[in-house]
Length: 309
Ligand code: DGY
Image (cartoon, rainbow, N blue to C red; front, side, top):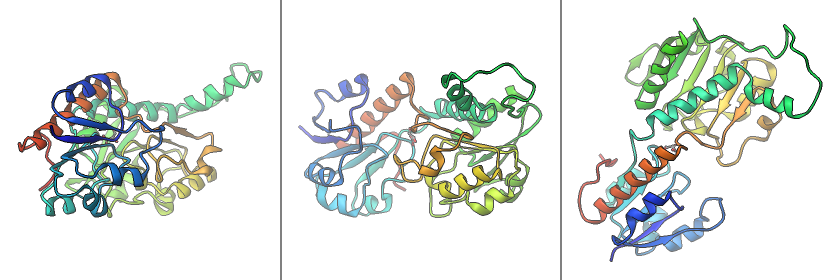
């Protein structure tokens, strides 16, 4: 029987899909990511690894795993946690789970857009204090979406799905990506809401920094459901505090799972613990997709979502 390591328990359907096909070494430790030393140890002599975005797969890990390793199946569409070039050099397949999480992630981007422009998390926190209040014309004012401009940074599957939803809100949409759209500078200057959907690469790291925030409208909102390091979190906290931008909604963090302390004190940021794909339906589809990729790779077949060039 092939030996596989699964680095976090998946939903039941996905766990059951492994039964009878391989011997599973499942990490069931505390909710934090599997400690690196344990990952290195338990990867040894495995035929396949089913990893989460929190596990770094690099030369050191591949050395520790050894020559039996055939595939790394990531339980995510993003794979910036994996050194794909190194895997390819060693003949190790890398697979991801595209498409199945597109709509749920776009929904979450909109949940954060709406929460940010209409101050929903702040309003909820306020009511829970029990402080006296009465309806008033100046109370907790947000901004309209209708007639305003949504800027999408990264126009792949999730960016496009997020853009599609804007029609219902009567928004104008502009986008910027490697393959076209408006320039990044125009997008930053013109958008009332910016939603990030670009992959994390050396070029996109800190795409949103102090200088970018200075060029955004003071009424603008920034939402990130892609990868944390696209945003310089310390600079974002300063911009939010100084009123350089109106609000932000973050589902991902620069040093995930840590959240920049300066953000925690701010009322104009809505925070979520990387929930983009966290629906019952999507997590079942992602888990089954990752398992299928894993089993295909172990059996010497080309996985459906191969990442290696
Ligand atoms: C991904 O798949 O890359 C998301 O960030 C987690 O669902």
